[in-house]
Image 1 (cartoon, rainbow, N blue to C red):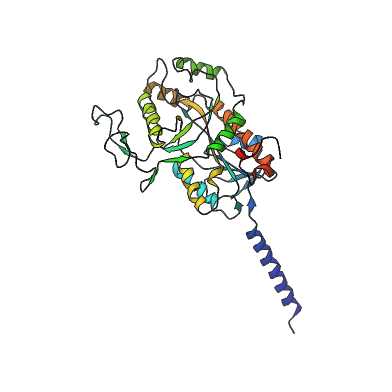
Image 2: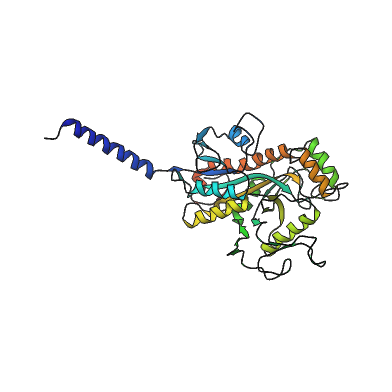
Length: 363
């Protein structure tokens, strides 16, 4: 006869095993992932980075340990919204998103991703404090480079595509090649939906922005009050500045998108994040059709009247970086949160159907 304490132990072990199996089989379903790239201090209560307004205002009250990533996660269980800080740069962005996408604690198969960060802006396209939804994310780092002092006089830039002998030589190689992925195209219908939902969002326009814009009167879009637009993201880990580099950026985005993209924002992480999401989609961990990239303008990437590249860089350095930093953080939350709230609050409408196929305001 088996002693009772052994039977009790076996029964307890069975309960524990069953509970663990249920836990493993039931990861947390996520509706929206808010992706930011840096936070200066604590998640809340001090000088803000990209993450703080989301934590404080959405809000994201819960914390979840995330040892494989850059920083702990934040979570709102009622809304099903998960927040992540990837860390700055393509490497940290890619590594953190891959770690999150492979984390068995979360079901991200239906999740929408809203990448919301600040960026430099092309003064030909928009003004500081503006917000742009990207149709394309283009990699700025993949290619050849000849120092401008050594390049032939006929060249307009020393940055060349791989496997080409002159700048912008046609035809371009495949955007996804052995060298890496040069361009990622987002779901245009989803991007258009997000833009239409947020186009009328009131954005801050204060004395600081007006002072900055005053030097850009010869750029019609740079002299406007902040606005929401559709425009593409060029991403690289080296911060560049100046009129010549801005001209290169416009041409580089146009080249890799076959003339379909328009350079607006210059950032760091988006290409690395998109590469990880692309790999995760192959494993059916995420849905590539559910990704949005929102960048808001914290500074101009080229000088205005009475400045040159060096003086603009010196001014940015003396002001700890971005001259419209606070306004750009505010714009990222104001615009991005409208999309996050719509998706999370009407999950029955958007879980199976992408927003472009669903009517706003009707279940």
